[in-house]
Length: 587
Image (cartoon, rainbow, N blue to C red; front, top):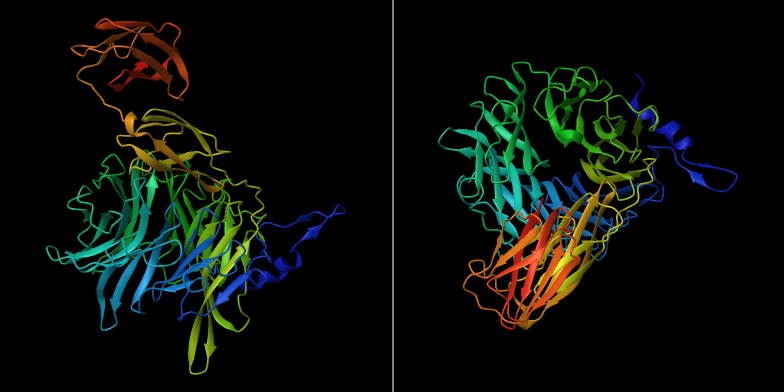
């Protein structure tokens, strides 16, 4: 097998080819010399390396290190973002604290999670969350300081992963020591935006999972189709048994018993187990891809894929498994929009690309692999984390270690590579129609497959073209956040609801029957006396399809709905004193 550290030589030779028309073509897996300094960002901050990377909606890159709770933000071209903290650099805590994962909010704010350790007591830890404003200052609306160090039971805990829910609640995972069983268990915890615990999640904000009467720690959580959460964990029994675990949860923190064996998948648990994972990825059709290493004396990189039901995917690799002999393990994986898989290998600063079936993609780098020498004086270099910029370029972050007088120094290291993809970044946009306090929104984005609407009154929607009723008057800052396989984008606008137009929802006084309707829409006013009515009917897209006036209506009103197409409709009734809204369906 070729030494991967030598692969950089042929890679650099074929960096770019220029055709007679002057167009430049770059081979997949080639380092992008326009990024930072000839393709490499390299800086010494408190002996640290990038353990987590995220790309913002504006294509800026946020990286976090494993020491001092350090955060770095770079411009899209790899230069330090001087508008963030101290010329792009922020150190929140001391060297006993480490960041394990980060998440970016829609406004550009940053959530970081990790732990505080004690050199005198290696098994002792405290869970840590920090919330940072887009400009790099601590967000003091979070726990009054922007920093939360857990001091509630169970006190001894650590966090390893973070997700942001659609309502901006903060979901974290890790492990905690429970005195009741004297071992570490998997925990998921949910916090509100102000740092308070969300008591509606799990039991008083905590979902505890004990599986094998052994020490277990959740390493990664990801959103899963149908509003579920997938969590990966490691287990290590005192007698030597170890391995990897998958659990699936509902949004409220209860286990989804329909997955695998009562919600739990045990992968190679036992003495001398063959697998120890570092990262997971949710694939198409709900498939789940593990990445890690073989747990043997000659550790190898390993990929292992399961179907949505927890059964091994025999169509991937060799009966669901891919062994990477040229690496000691795989530290991180991400998926391109064409479903190819990028992997960070534990062997030099190396990345590889695999096809969706698990076979190595020989069109990438040097027969599927690319190794970059960050610094020729370094004696040890590793890639730990990956991300995709909008447009498809690959960001890789890690560490480069070199000797200095009487010691060694670890340098933050980041590179960017061409992926060969021409992936247009989606552009968010929307229009709206306001009828008093009901507003109909129309998505005008260039492309998207996920939508998150923030209506400015602490309510949200994932519909593409939602309608919304405002219960208060005033100005509301509405944002549409979209994403697809090529990136994310946001667009915001201000909507004003006049003082005299807040809806009164008189559900007990107005009824529609039958509902779903047939070809006649019957409206019963019950005991409500209304004069000078205006009736409006809108379809789900917000288009007005029917309007009529009634001066002195009877207690029942009939509307011919024979020409209405199947779908959801909104009936709005406006009188001198009331504004009333009802929904109905025509099947």
